[in-house]
Amino acid sequence: MATAPVLTRLLSSCISCANSAGGIIRNILRGGNLGVVMKGFDDPQTEADRQAQRCITTSLSRKFPNITIIGEEDISSQVTDESDAVVVTEETNEVLQMTCPQKYEKIEERQIVVWVDPLDGTKEFTEGFVTHVTVLIGISIEGEAVAGIIHQPFCDDPAQGSGRTIWGMVGLGVYGHVPITLPRTTNAGFCVAITRSHFNELVQGAVDAVNPDHILREGGAGNKYLKVIEKHADAYLYPTKGTKKWDTCAGEAILKALGGTTTDCVGKPIQYLPSQSVHNLSGVLATLQGHQQLLDKIPQEIKARLPQ
Image 1 (cartoon, rainbow, N blue to C red):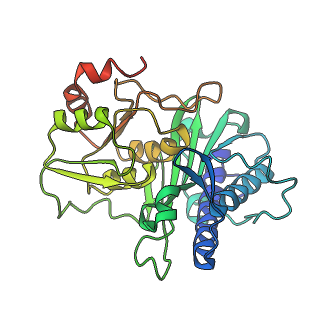
Image 2: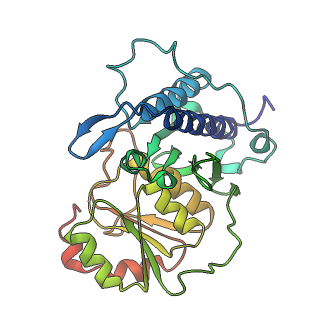
């Protein structure tokens, strides 16, 4: 096991970290003191965000000191050391037993960027919509999303706090608790997943243009990716700024491992480079199939209002 390629060992550790972060989130919700602070207008941060990120970043940086980790939460001013972080040392043996795709066998730590959203859907978390919450860990190499983990801390009965984890790597496949082979049995017809709480005229215009039979208004980018991954929706459509690269890297990698596609709403790939802005200024379009046809339906007047 010790000789497994770096990317395989990193993915194995990331899965364990995501699972532990989910446990932290559940425990804080049960405790009842969310410790909410506002980072900006309508942008809450909770103690669960802070502790989950500290767990993930501390655990990964100790084991893989030369990777770059970019997390959503700025906790540097709140923490003077890592002594109170939950440190995860476990690995996921299922991953270590798999054969790493040849193109990634010789990847070194310094080539890897890990994008961490420790609690995607914080607004929903504070409002009680806990099934919308996910833990997202995405792995990129040379700007491309190549592996990802989506952990859903409250996937079945929120009162029981059961969680599930979906993970994947491009060239390896998608694994975990996800019925990816099952056909959709609800929402027959074309269905899009869109924002629950950040609706604007660009979103409305794009939705009108693609003319779906059904609309799922969901919180959290990771949650909307899950809707597409599990075929509850045909597309995740968000034609405006608002998401960041830690929101999309994990979902894009898993979707890509299934043969799906993510671009911005102009049609350009999302680049996961630490030297560039973390903002997805031109929105997000994610599909399992028919990507270009849907992209062509987004009106030029909407695309013209997005940064090129």
